[in-house]
Amino acid sequence: MARDTGFPGADAENDFSRQRRRAELARLSAWLTRQPADVNTILPFDEVVAALGKTGETFLGLVVVDVSSIVGSVDRTRDFDRYFRPTSARIRERWQRLATAQRRGESVPPVQLYRIGSMHFVIDGHHRVSIAIARRFSKIDAYVTEIHTRISPEGINARSDLIMKDHRRLFASRVPLEGKQREAIWFDDPFDYAELAENVEAWGFRLGQETGTFMSRAEVARRWFGEEFLPVVRMARRADILPEITSDAELYIWLACERYRMVRRHIWDEDIIDELRIRSRRRGKLP
Image 1 (cartoon, rainbow, N blue to C red):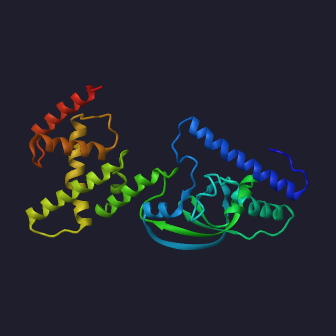
Image 2 (image 1 turned 120 degrees about the horizontal axis):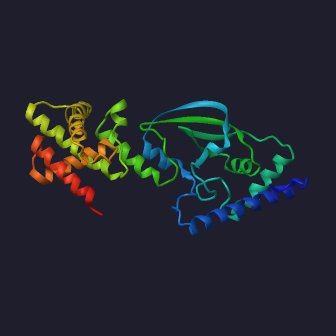
């Protein structure tokens, strides 16, 4: 790290120039190594909330926040990159003026942040956060409002991760499983959530036709998990069908789709399981 000159204005100017160079080098490095386009993109608060589903919020007051946990913004996603380095010289004047004031010892008001899980998003104070990072401060004072969401924000590292979260949120609204049952359903392909939701809804419709009763989505989800999902997955595991698939949900959706291709019927018996075992072995031999 370059040493300060002792002149606040000059040091602030050097800080800004250094952060701009780092932002450009990071952008160039991502392009040369063919990393995803959003690897250095600041997370947009509105898109994150839309993907997770907001259920409420709580004002936490003035707290001390780890600067490294600030990864997103409410409305300044074009001015800064993921690490709050300036993406253009357009904000230079204001950035350097605030940085100079801080170096002269002038008081700095706390920033305002939203908290989602362990992530923080800037409402007000983007330049102050950027300056704190440039000066390698590890903590910052902030007024924080915590956002509560329908599904967990865990696993969001880039904008592209929001697609998975959005599909998982929609699945949870269509198939409202709870607790460990919800955790048991996960896919690598986000579009599998939509396919499974349609499968569960169709199963619930057939059950309602058989029993002549109306069932809520919650009841359909609960009964499908206990009466259809778990028994089928257990049969498949005992039959050693596609043991390389670690996700029970991915195994189930493959079984259900292959069964329908074979017999066009929604039944499970030993003959179907035996045929599925044969098909799974053929699948494993494909290049």
